View 1 (cartoon, helix red, strand yellow):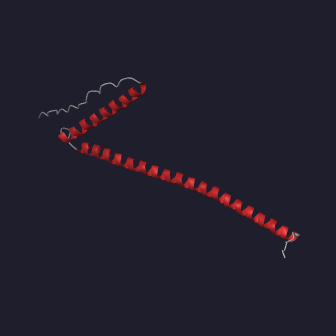
View 2: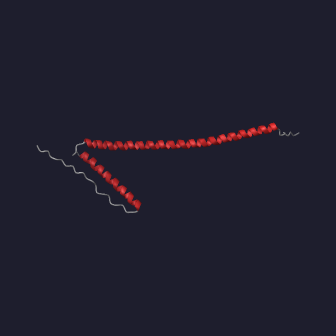
View 3: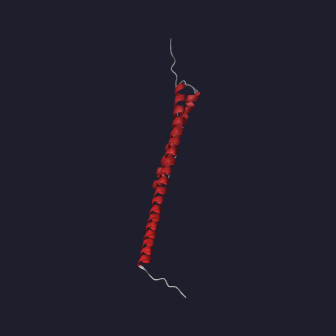
Length: 132
């Protein structure tokens, strides 16, 4: 004896409501997935911005501290002091090296051979004698 299940209006209504429930659930899962993806991309972008801002502020603080400290120390030293002259000559040489590198980069980008570096700047300090 085989039993056949007859299609009844109640059974059709139950299957239709089950079908609607599954479609609704699938829609919620799809929208949750897209919302999660958007949230993750937003969080990654904000994390990258925070890391970038932290790196900038760290580099700024270090460079400011080094340069300000050197300039402050130089200004405290007497004019004829060898340490002060060393700071002045070293900073002048650093500026010359920076200018030379920049001009080499600019000229290389244009296809022109780099020029020889400029002569080193020197600072001459003279003392005036005070007569009585």
